Image (tube, rainbow, N blue to C red; front, side):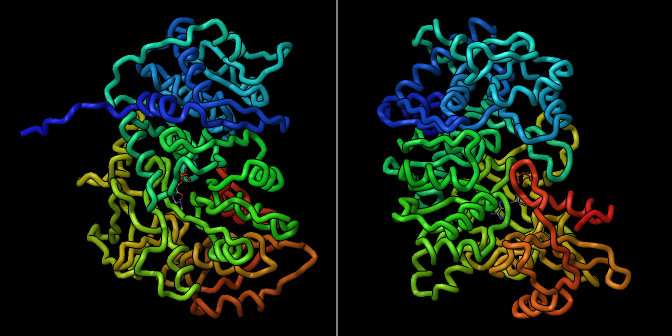
Length: 542
Ligand code: ADP
């Protein structure tokens, strides 16, 4: 028997309509690439979304299922694109501007974008490959001066595109399972693959993310959206802000630590999201130049790669700011797990609390996780046994876009993450490594993540990335590449070995250390271990 409740489609249009009806007075503030500050209301943004919807359908003939690309930083117009494109039933494909030109060309041709909306400052990146883009009919320039010159064909300025369009547009009826947006994986482990989000998955993900046990967002918050809109839809925050009525602050390309701290202070930011590299930069800058007034920032949401325990401890002790760690992937929209202390942890010591918070946390409602042994059997939740992390849920991928090879899915419907983790008795998951980054020395697994976290706790070490290198006797052994805070301030191998001896047994401790200027990073700011391994194998790691 069916329930007798309304069939109310969960679409991004309902998010936009809700944001406009309840929070039309709330603000979207953008810091433009030149540092200028722009501010307008959700209500103004709503009207521009409708003008955009008219322009897309009337001027460009975009219809349901068409792909429309964005190549842009975080700012007001990019939020309009999220809602305007998806609202008419087209797919908002956010292209990662930091990928190589070969990858960008591949992604645009693979997705078959018909129109690309592009920031004026990013135009040179696409000009080079424009002749190779087979399906793009129009380019729309965002924030371009009137006399802006480009070799891109068929261009129009964004403001000109929407200027004479009506503010009235009736959204078409959409099925909540229709596609609304697409991101490609950043290709850390191979060619980028398209992840096609549905309206329903996007809506449900946003409501789950907003909850107190997840990102804990309300209309009292002012949020700095540091995670780029081209990376997993800024972790879903452009949707969360309209549902929760929180003020949105968009940094565009102002992402250096000084610029971020300035926005934290001026806008009295209460929450912000970012990968660990961003927060490490902010922390070191705050230590160097402590703010005169206590920051309004209560919590930073951090994830995307392992968060050093020392970073969480430092922020907490030095500035009273809590790090909320989350785990996720492009394929999981991204939120999968969140690490928060629970009521039963209140009596624990600070060190014990930190150990829990440094884990990747428990699955949020709507997501299930499990770990699986090499032979396919389920691994126990004892906090010790490592297994491949598998996930399923309402906003987890069921198949990659246009990809025949779907071997990352199990026969019983779980997604294989490629991460190796443990899960403890309370359901707290802890990432130990990615399958490809694991080090197997003399038949024993060594967690590179744990070694990195311990090394980065050393006051003189800024970054540490550990990879496996070949070894005649043990097959593989760990090698630590290290960036010092101050190059003049040397650290000896012996000192590091002694530091690690506190937490690791002898065979797990690297004997090899190389001191480098910077750890190579991926397009989204993660340690690029593939690149470190390549540099090592070519003798260039120094
Ligand atoms: P890509 O897979 O292309 O690197 P994603 O952004 O989807 O791009 O990366 C997802 C991966 O990032 C996860 O599989 C995991 O390895 C890593 N990751 C995400 N969050 C965390 C976290 N909190 N701690 C450790 N690793 C994380």
